[in-house]
Image (cartoon, rainbow, N blue to C red; front, side, top):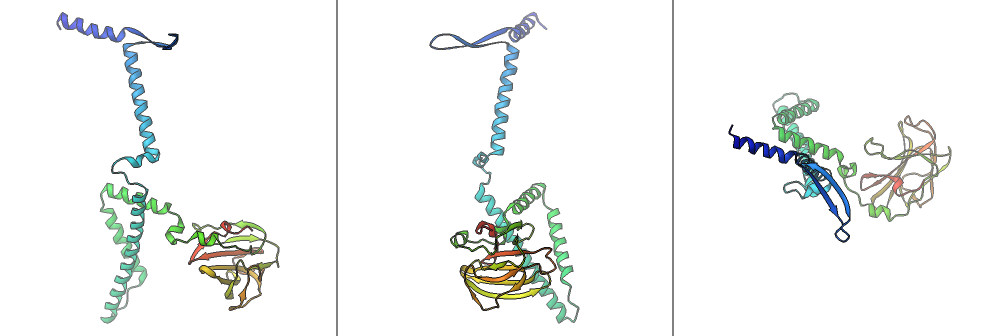
Length: 292
């Protein structure tokens, strides 16, 4: 190595080792507010740390906040919702097609004098076929499918079952069927489509709205059950009653007694009312509209 190059390298090292002092002054009073003493190498390291921190903070902000939707190509809420609903429609169409294929296959077998294929094996074969197709997807497609499946699970059960107009129900004045303590809440995920209210045994059960009794019967699981049809396609159901006071076809007013609280049916362990509220064939949470 030549002497010139050696001196040049020494000069660079010297600049990195040379210490500098940085000041911040008040522009009006020229009073020193802050100072720091760093070498060239320390200043370079500090600058890199600051840049890395800024990059990390911006990345985290973009990943974990809605700002990520402004990235070109990233799907927004509407696009992701459309993907999920299209996936649901595709699954529904797949089920319909599988049923038609099953019936067509069995029709042909019956015409040929063969025994029909049990539906259980037909469903199993269709599921195996779909799994084989899934396994042939690329890694990216599999990740996308997994993400969509998680989106589907995250959708509210009301959206999967169908939509109900909450404004219609909210505008209706419901009479509480009983007064008591709620022991088991409405839960779509657990398929508990009712609110269970514990109250005094033999207490009267009132109709929540004016309507017509469309069912008054007994079942082994739920005991005495009475169902009332109301306007706007709202149905109220009262289960585990001790006694029914109305019969199908009876017109009832809001607050009119229709049954007695009991402990009937194999699924009941104590005196309570199992109360369900349905709108357009969809179960809704009674506690959103009624104070028990």
